[in-house]
Amino acid sequence: MADPVFSPDDQKLFDSRLADILTRYPADRKSAAMLPALRMMQEILGWCPPEGLRLVAERLEVKPERAYEVASFYVMFHTEKPGKYVVDVCTNLSCSLRGAEGMLAYLERKLGVKAGHGNEQWLLREAECLASCGTAPCLQVNEDHHENLTTREKVDAIFANLG
Amino acid sequence: MTVAPAPAVQTVISEAWGQPNSHLISEYKKRGGYKALEKALAMEPTAITDEIKRSNLRGRGGAGFPTGLKWSFVPKDNPKPKYLAVNGDESEPGTFKDRYILEYDPHLMLEGIAIACKAIGAHKAYVYLRGEFKFQAERVDAAIKEAYEAGVFGESVLGSGFKLDCYLVRGAGAYICGEETGLIESIEGKKGWPAVVGLFGCPTVVNNVETLASVPPIMNKGAAWFAGLGTDKSGGTRLVCLSGTVNRPGVYEVSMDTTIDQLIHDPKYGQGMPAGRKVKAVIPGGSSAPVLTADETDVALEFEALKMKQTMAGSGGVVVMDDTTCMVRALWRVTRFYAEESCGQCTPCREGMPWMTRLLRKIEEGLGEPEDLEILMNVAASIAPFPPIGLGNTICALGDAGALPVQSFVMKFKHEFEQHIAEKRCPHGDHPWGHFGDWA
Image (cartoon, rainbow over all chains, first blue to last red; front, side):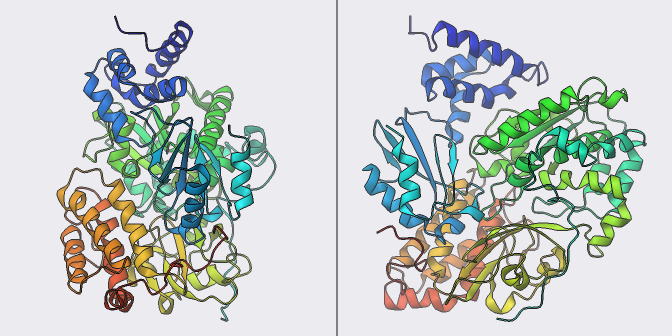
């Protein structure tokens, strides 16, 4: 038998939260809980592994392909295990007008990975507009938002506390 | 540059922004919050819709469709449940206004939701926020909980007997889910492919966050007051998002007759350009809106006026490019976005966007050939016509959104594209964005 996806405690947590979410949708539309279910799984495991996608599909009474289709469609779901920190740098127009391309090049040097690539520690990506154009340039580390990054010192401060 | 002072504005949406604890229900009630809902609950649903119609409120998500009219399309005699879906997917590049409503005044939106649901007869509302809005989702989640505790949501809204549930749904990073029907697909737990039926196959109204936040002030102060703030065809004020190379970017609530020049230069708003720089180009309504040259910016930030200039008020995202900006590089950034975010359903968009992106990168790197500009324009025209006259050759407006910038940039700044090709290099060298920040 395959290893369980979650520890027993995490499994309990996942199931109880999923049961609550299912009350929000029509009874014959369990699959509507797909995005919240995948998000919960990723919060616990750090990504959406194949056995996890099978588990979510089983709970929501759809084929595993449906879970994979959704997980692979949205950039925030990781169907491959990412590094410990996912760094999303906005390089869209408003951020680029205020130095985002230079900031990205700086981060490539600092973290030792090219944009679009990663290692065990980092996954560095160019993100699409993060709706923070008035406080550009900006980036997110594991979904935590940082803005007004106009100097190297401000960027260094974010990464100083990340091991 | 001398620009006349911007017209005065009576704030409708942004009044509480920046005040301490403005996001809490206790503070919201001190400002008179949820009084509009009480009033609406005592009214006939059709009377609420009529009031919104008379206010001339138009959707603030991009298309500018009259809100009251949209509500009136919900069938009264359909036995199926009805739904309200709230579009907080704010993803159009250059747009960042809804995040401030969500952060500073979530109850203004929630009250608008409750009133809208009463008007259309919906007992469930889903608030869809883009996945990257983590902090904003926490704020809205907390506000929904407060609203349940205060009886705004639940079995009997403020004791009226009207049942209403409101749920937060978080996206996971896909621009297409801000498209009305893509949003519905996403709430249903699918990938966001635009389609034509309502949520769970039922009648559904989709309204933008700012649109719903405009509803309580209308109910409080009356449709005539709101209509009087705006133009003949569009009531109220507007939130505009100013970004790019100006001295003070930000979200500003402006009167509809405020011009782009006033927004950029007025001390209340953008406070002018950085020293030594001039405006070269401005995108007036999110990155899909056709670009304007510096000679075209004496225009009001309003639906009809911008339409006359063959562009769009869109989502209110005003992006300023100064004279050190490389227009090829800027367009490449814009087009790359639509290529990334195309959902892949329609061929012209799926194939055309990446093709245009590759051509632009090629020109920017000095490898462009003279025929490339014609190919670029042909590909764009095969996706959507210019000027914008409605839907192009794709199911949803993402096709138009990606084709219109290409057409407008190339038409209006053709010499820059030709110069890249003739000189076989970017004339701006290593500084296509001028000098911003010291990252070397």
